[in-house]
Length: 77
Image (cartoon, rainbow, N blue to C red; front, side, top):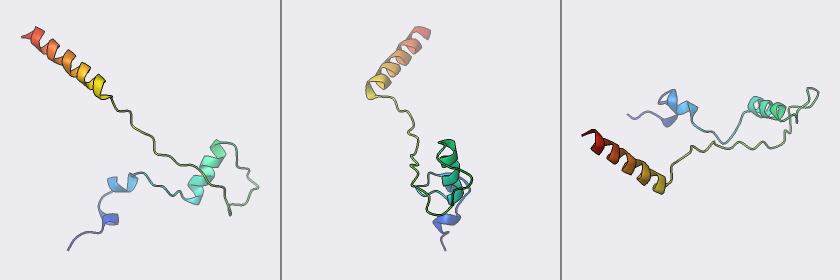
C-alpha cells in the first residue's frame, strides 16, 4: 500500500505554498504597515506571496568557470 503524498516527510511540508493562513496574511500586512490592531480579521485584502527565485548562473558564465577550473588543474599537474 502506498503512502499518501501529504504524509511523507517533514521536509515535504516546508515547500512553497501558494495559499497563506489568516495569521500569515496578517503578519505580512503588519510588515508592510497595512494592518491596524482594531481591523477585522475577516475580509482581508489579498497578499502577494511570491517564491524567491534562486540565482542561477548563465550558460556563458558556467563555461567560463569550467574553463578556468580546467586551466587551474592543468597548471597543478
